Image (cartoon, rainbow, N blue to C red):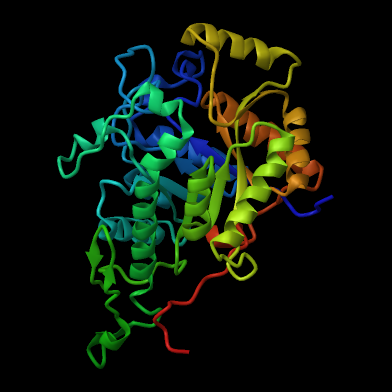
Length: 402
């Protein structure tokens, strides 16, 4: 049995992960595009000592399908920019990690590296980043720089066709992350002198061109932002299959995976480990934290969560579906499941509340105390950075002379 503490992250999305969440009595649909709404959620999560919150983002309106827009008007549509929103939350929180999603298919890597480095300064070392590819033709149409062929319903049903389509995008994403990491290192830690007597602000010899040349772009560097407080902000990725696993093991510090049950949980961990070995990653010297994603519907009165989900499904017009497993039950039952999966090998869990703030409050005020009673979750923050929360060391700049 694993005795280490469970790590917990929270995935924030609109009114919650159920499409009908915005219609619940305690939902706040009129506040979805306001900073105080998101601040309330992040502060609630921080008071429960969670490791981080992630913030979803897209380049197009949300849709009920994965590959094309829809015309539904009964679901939440519209987003705030996740990176800018995370920067707003930085000064309003003190401990919790902030991991926004940012697209890598249609965004320049230099701009992404600068934005995430700036977020690390705005949060005093609590920034992360979830790179996200975009395969939708409608997203490409917003920019006009490249054409992405429209996926068909048949494509979506054929995994080998999806894999062939997505591999080039993941290869490009890997280059984007590599450029960002090199740019974060392009200022050595002691490049800033700030000596008013001598009049020297920087040591120019400690700023470095990265001179990246790849298939998709070339970036000279150095960055315009000094090395981030964490050295390297945490890179997290969501992975469901072989190609995303390859990207995660090559480029990420944290990977979110989506097993359907306990048996698949063990299989998924083994697949990620095998992929890391195949791609040459030494997880001893370069750890990869593995989190399982779960959509959660929680009520502590037996049967209430199931009836609430039934009402949500009725309002949505169809049962909730998700790439991740869906848990419906009490906080104690969820604690049992997390412990079981933790023993399978997961470092932690990213929980997706079906309804905000209802299921978030169930996590923070019911689940967390239950895990603490079992000795499975921290009683206080012992680190000041996101890397510290996750037990990841601060890396040295690759350009620093020993």
